[in-house]
Amino acid sequence: MSVKDRISELRNKLREEVEKITDSSLATNFRNKYLSKKSELSSISSELASLPPDERKESGALLNEVRNEVEELYNAKLDEITLKELNERLKAEAIDFSVPGRDSTVGALNPFYIVENEIIDIFTKMGYEVVEGPEVETEDNNFTLLNIPSDHPARDMQDTFFLREDGLLLRTQTSSMQVRTMAEKAGAPFKIICPGKTYRRDDDDATHSHQFAQVEGLLVDHDISMAHLKGTLELFLKSMFGEKREIRMTPSYFPFTEPSVEVAVSCFNCNGKGCSMCKGTGYIEVLGAGMVHPHVLEMNGYDPKEYSGFAFGIGIERIAMLRYGIDDIRRLYTNDVRFLHQFTKQVK
Ligand code: DAH
Image 1 (cartoon, helix red, strand yellow):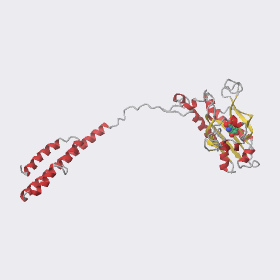
Image 2 (cartoon, helix red, strand yellow):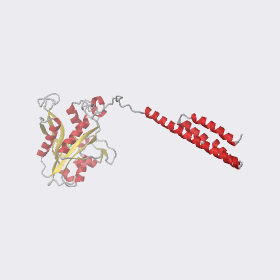
Image 3 (tube, rainbow, N blue to C red):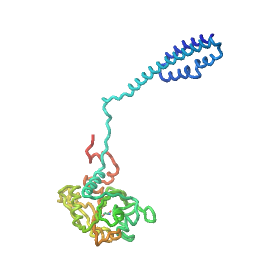
Image 4 (cartoon, rainbow, N blue to C red):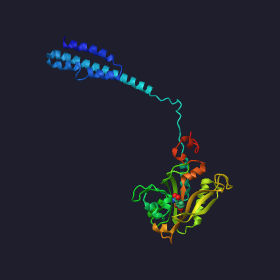
């Protein structure tokens, strides 16, 4: 068979083959098989050189014509199926905005955080700065520089998780931040609160947890008196438990304050008449406080002749439990959403 005849035959075959392309992978196969360097068109083209000149010219022209025609047919086919496939994809991936949404469960803020945020809010409105510090502390910051030397019985009252023999421990109280803050403020007046986690070797039960949280407060300035402390805590407790509450301070003992007080708020359950919640006394103890001990000021770089101050320690869980009538501290840590939803309005 002459080369020209072979080309004509190939043309017919390719015209048929192009029609069989129905998707992009068949298109790729076609291109690799019939339009590449290894195709029949190419191998015929390389044979042309050995033909006599006249025949070479005619066959070469025909071969070009066929190649152009097949490429055109192929390109047109490719455009057609690309468009077809795009339309199919758009249809398959179309979003139907009228389909009803899936129901989602919305969480709720733990009452612990509701109370913590509120405490922070109340004190920042009074101009307090919020500071935070490490839960792993030195014995000096947690005890010694707070007037609790190593033979002091208060160390036993706060069963401590010691981490190392040289005195690194998990802080038993946020009072350690008093030491850090006085070092940082280096003799200048300030007022801070420090919310944070604290740890004690307690057996967990309804009212005890080996990990709990406190908010420490410390104000140091000139001419600070017990009246400032009382006014501050009264404002705090009324914001927290209601305008009608009255506060009561009774003498207490903390090594780092002198005098020290236990602060109670008139019972919000019975309005001070006496009920099971306040154990008949009309008052509920809520926090400890006092005037910063002169020795503590002195050890931490403040001259007690020039400076005075007050401090307080609030247990966040205790406030949350009282405010919301929660009977077991462990409920604050388990994050059961059925429990959590009782304290915030559900956003839905
Ligand atoms: N650190 C005390 C505790 O954990 C709480 C406390 C009481 C802090 C009186 C104070 C304070 O700053 O003045 O029991």
